[in-house]
Image (cartoon, rainbow, N blue to C red):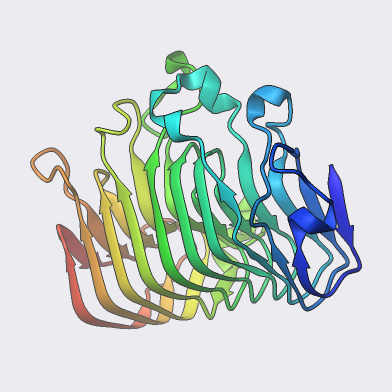
Length: 292
């Protein structure tokens, strides 16, 4: 592991560690930095076969207002991997602290794509192509994401372990609370603009991918604009409970509607949840659409 600690300003990471074009690193930890742009252009990462699959490529800890840029990790042959190879896939990026984000990043052939685990995280210009769990996980308030493309989900356990309940998500949103208290948890201030989530069984005949979902907790004071979800799963866009939610130019459709219709559903019949309120829609379409 390489560590960037206590830095600020513009940091060209390859030069910072004097990495050659042939160098491969396992994980880079960004610790105690502030107001820094960390430019990962030219940084190469080892793949999971090198014994580092349990770690993310880049992990941030106790930093503030930092941006990871130009991270490029490509495994072009992911489409031919078997489940053992997928189980060795590297995770992408983990953001633990407030105000940190990504821009201009491309991740291909990963387990998790990006985990944004704190408040005021932000992402601009991100592609996650080929992933084995969630492409993007959000657990904090005031998240902002723009120009994001996510898709092509695969499975990473043996076929004997498959069941209908197993799935990944394009975007998975949930509060960080124990399961018995999650219905009380609130994610607030989410803003997503220009987002595409896509998945077909052509990519993976063993597993479907949900689109965007918050099935545990509540979503408040949030806006989704120009979001297109094309996944052959009935759960296209699902929010358990929403208050003051704007949906504009949101379109949820299955690429195989003759097999499964993809839905927008705002509400749940699970216990301890309230009826959603103040959900505004403008130019919203879906194979199936309803507010519970």
